[in-house]
Length: 477
Image (tube, rainbow, N blue to C red):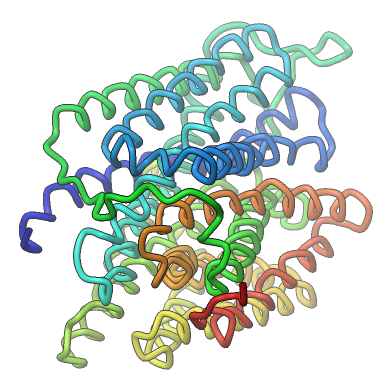
């Protein structure tokens, strides 16, 4: 099959990346919402991420056990059916938000998030290696960065659009929640919080996922199950690059989610920025990842003309910045000032130089980006105000290529164990459950700013993986 025939399936599957990015980023809106409704501390609020990302671990462990004992499930049913199953399971989780809000039971919210996470586990296991295989091995990182860029587009607009639905539009419908004193629970802006704030948006999301499952079913996607043998056992764990890559995924997802989860509360507590405005700033954290992934798709492509390549990167980064700002500006009723986000352009420039030094090499680029994030966290820990804020928000730019580069480096050379290796990598999204809890506990005991010391450890390890940990090899039998 020639490369041209891969365009349609790549477009269709990239739509999935957008949707699960959107829903994943909605957790950052849910956390302050549920923190208000249930009067939670930071640790308790971070159980949102624990339930959601913990499902990735449980689901992947189950997948790995089946794979080791019965043969790889995705190799049996095909990527297409695996994606459809993931979409339908996710839709069930989304539907459960309605009774969770009606009964005002935190445990049902967490259960809904767990089921949603199980559905996303199937999507991740099937879709990531599928995109990596839609073309040559040399451009796998470029393709995955492109799909992940649209994933980031979802995570970027979710705080804005989803935040508008939850904190402004649907929140006005129905009777407000009452606190332990029988008084209406209100946002810092004074608006009362109702169940409809989450019920109606998540019903819409569920309908979209069912519709996508139907579209995938009716779409002719090429079968890429190249290996006809269904290997049993845990052969994938023999590969060093995969094992070290599993730890890298744990660290990366944990750090990215942890920082994104606490940013709204950080801005509210340290800078007195209300939720409605804070979610607009949060769009630049996730938007930075989108910018970086689009740039990564170009940087790691087969384009030979360096002048053309970097001209495209500069132009695209500025264009996407303008798009993000216009979305935020429009949603804020044209009150969000351009001057308040201009510091972000400085970090876009640093991001472009980092790509230049990375020389289109996935491992070297990963090492440089991780090291930059260590520096940014150190700055955020030792400063305050706008300097600290933009040091944290700009980290999205450097998180951008991490998933794609780690994933492709880790599965490189696995052959018939590729799907099994993919499930093990998805298993380590567990980092998104564990590290936010650690940061939340640190914030409760030492303050929200000091809590940013937690993700520093993650980025130090990621620096190592991009330096040496990615190198291919096998453990001795």
